[in-house]
Image (cartoon, rainbow, N blue to C red; front, side, top):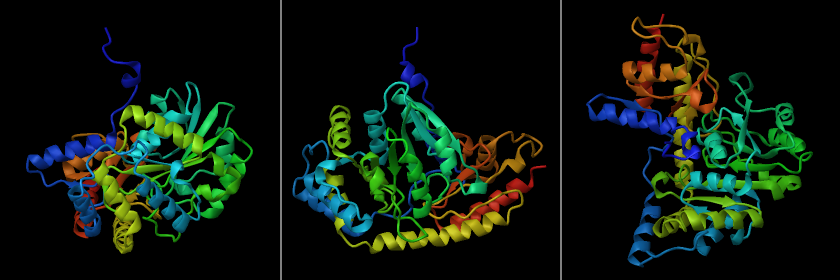
Length: 397
């Protein structure tokens, strides 16, 4: 007898979390692993945000919060969207959740029926297709390789839309590639979407503030499809608040109400203390965000330079986020004498066990010819990690 549901059985574990767990095991055994597998800023949460949380505790903000979040936080998010993005939302169009991951999943569950298709550009964040499957939908992948900077074209989008297409998930800046869509590139995709009025856009903008190409461009800026765009964002990456678990959805009213309705049955409102911290993040000084972004830019330049010096790796220059996604297929079929590298997952495990650097194979991101490294770590770790990787890869013949 199968004790578990078909829904659970068809899901795959998160590859990023699995590699991070394996890295932690080796570290616990005394192995000097450099963990570049997890997408988490290595900075501490800024002091003024922590102080706001402490104040909230002293003032007894410790009871259940409204399902979609405190009105004051939703107002702060509306102000952020207006001031930074030129987008007008009312607080009842905002749903605050337990992290951006819940925001994405809640949106998919609110939109997708059994058999609906959801377009997922590849490379993709590992959880997107799994969330579509949880909603009994069908993920439809559009491959975009390093030669096109990991960004889909309007022609590819047009060719992927069918009468069953319900949504497109667009992540910019991207996890896992760091690619960023320009305004002109978004406008070209919008021209396609204008012809297909049944297609919604789930715009994952969680890396908005970690961009090296100027002002963030949101696909929600285009009026012709505004009523079909759902923005997902949060405080985890920009403010180094991953553990606080605060994300949000900004959506047309019927969709925000649906997401809130689902959240009311799944989790209710997010942490009261975390919400007060997030409010301070949005309403407080933003210098901390700029300083962290500049540090990531410096690290991007450093890791790109070092990766390009390793024979066999093909590297583009990420324009945002904090990931490098090198093409590594030139190593497939090679061996160090004890093991053969058949795919990028093999390569990632080889780098963990031989170089003691934790990365994630691209198979789980829909790009089996690449692997992902997070450079959300110190300059010293980046230099040491790339030296180790170069030495390990040179042993493959």
